[in-house]
Length: 427
Ligand code: HMG
Image (tube, rainbow, N blue to C red; front, side, top):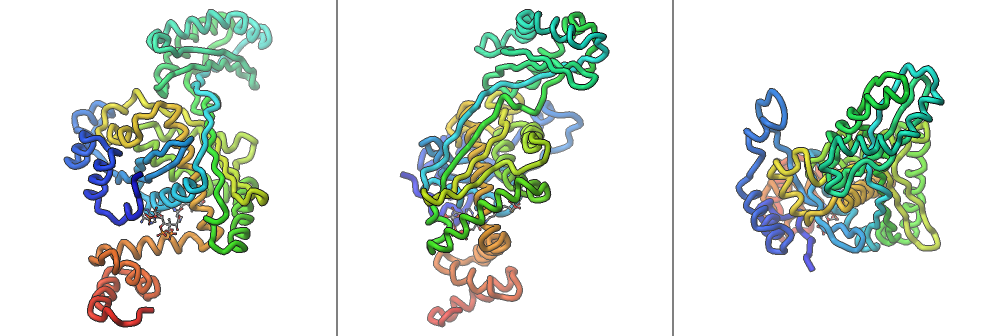
């Protein structure tokens, strides 16, 4: 079994080597990382318009997520300090508590055509529903390749909302996110829908509110991981439950609560070359599904089991094929690290990461506060920058956190002192 302890203290080169040695990274991906092989300019120029350059972001690894009994290492692209540390920390505690379980409720994308100006809404609706089988055929004829792959249009529904008659089509897009596929199908339906309804199409487009792609991740964290002190652990468990309730009733808190969840979700969505705007839009709409904007996750304290139980559900229409996924060398490395998951597995991993991120943030918030962890990380980075060895880091960090100025100069002074006076009693 791979030991991840101390992974954070290694250099990037040592981390790559450790991944390769443990067969968590293929030799080809190892080479790509070593050569710093980034998106070629010519490819980038094909992906967007008016290209002038490329923007690099850090890619990190949150190792050892136990999801449905299998371990995964999750690549994370984020610029925010402490996000990866928090995810790794939560993954460790949740693994020791039995890991995550995920449920893929369904995996279909939705498209819509909004019709206006129908003289009789009811008969327009009935005419469309009577022609449902033909309309589904028509949609599939507009994109035959997805039908060959086993996917295609599945269901068609109609709803009248004020002055609009809205036709929704559910499409099985297989491994793709399917935006182009669904848009093509929706546009192909327009003439027939106008004919059947007597109305006019205002627009035909995919919906990012992917309620037919809901994914749930759950975990149950043992109380002993909240604190070694049993009474303290119980208090923290109660507070975690309250933190979850607060996010259900106060949109100011719900927004930050969900931002913490997306710290993890966005980082893996970005690493896998997916459309993070679509995932964000769908997630936030789902958070407001009750009519008020709410926290996406729920945490409850199960006193009998001695566990804090977490649950996170949101739309996750993620892709493993299509778009820029095969084009960006860093994205191919990310898929290699993940073990080439299919879209359903990847969706479950992303939601698990969101739940882990949420757990770490809430645990810090109701415990020591968020700044303690941030300052500790900063102190550790300064200790490493000052050249401290593994043995020198703990005393150096301890003195740095007590010092007035948390900067490199102070770190170097303390390190000199530690080296010059190795037997001195340290505070
Ligand atoms: P700690 O207990 O001091 O950590 O927590 P530790 O030094 O004892 O290390 C424990 C493990 O954590 C390590 O195990 C690593 O797995 C991981 P080891 O490898 O030692 O066996 N770990 C790290 N991994 C990578 N790089 C590191 C690192 N340090 C520890 N440098 C920790 C420290 C930061 C993890 C903890 O305080 C924490 O989780 N804090 C929460 C931080 C957070 O959520 N940050 C997100 C940004 S804040 C935000 O935007 C969201 C927010 O507003 C959301 C909300 O309000 O809900 C908060």
